[in-house]
Image 1: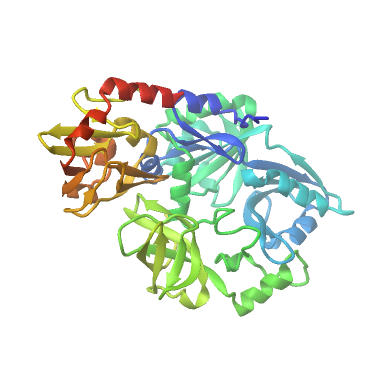
Image 2: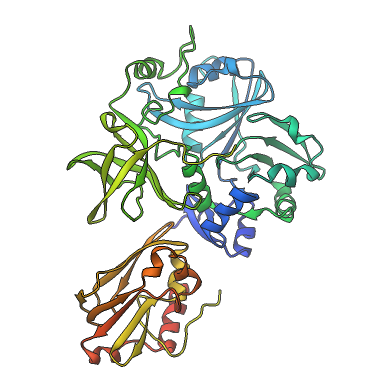
Length: 362
Length: 131
């Protein structure tokens, strides 16, 4: 039996633009329209539009939503307020990661949550499993709404004429509901590229109209290939690479995400607070190559002949014009400047630990 | 998508092109291959003087998302490599038959030239792959 890939409402647009389509989390998604490097550079210099409709969107409603999320999430909702969003991980009891996500407080009893495409069913189940007696209802809006990311230094300038609110009043991580050419949208000043920009969500019926309006501003369509090279330069974790169900946020370098939350229990708290205090045996570090070549995920990392870890993400950085990567290695080698060897097929290339992020312009 | 395949070149079904002048063959990857690979960021070229056989892996081509291999279309000795590709790997994408050439070899078995594909035969292979 062959299962067809799922399509976002922008599928026909991608095909019309002759995008190279691939299977991503069961969806047919555009890797690139023209050139990953050109799309990457468009986002760094002007603006790009990404179809992220494959991602999940949940609505959480009820009087106990905040209590519920305080138990599920490692970040602290006391730092949140209406009109603001927060990035967090939700973890298993052993501290490893179920998913990383962003939730937005519309009202204390109404939250919007955006999750990774590959984890939609898993997350929905995880959340529902833990409601217990609490007054929380979760609705899965993933296939009912579209999501686009509009990112780049010119994103404010390009978007402002189309919306009926003053975008300069939305600070980073804050959001609003407004009209884009008369169509209702949710718009947040968040992103995964390391540039200024927005993420918007809206009903499926507006898909074509909104896409066309955004492209007419001068922004370029940008695919998953550029999305990956941009987030790698900005050093944002990608679920399945830097975080997964065998890596904890502390090991991934997200120690700031693990909050003390005095008097509030949350899943994974015991393990994570201990790791935050005592450190972990392994840690994610930034990598550059000293030899020429390209490093990619799963390549093994060695120090003086002994295997010390592996590459979690790697590739060419169009902004820095060299190969960059992230690796999960034994913590005794984490100092900047530590030289190591990375196995690339049948050779060993010399690499070095460097500080991160590689690039951000938010 | 219209690809360019110069008439005067010979081809391999593994998407290399060959330009033959006397017993010197210049080799690169076709317009179809560069498009499949995407943005090329690094090419590992062989040492000059290396002798290889037809079908041997002679260069590794890294793109943003993939790795491709250049195969020897003919047996011979590497006499020149395109050192310009170190700083401008993207010329393989923009000029696969011109400034994107990869290696020059001294052919040591001229009989093998007859096994190379004509442009028509290669075009048919590309059409079949596109389906």
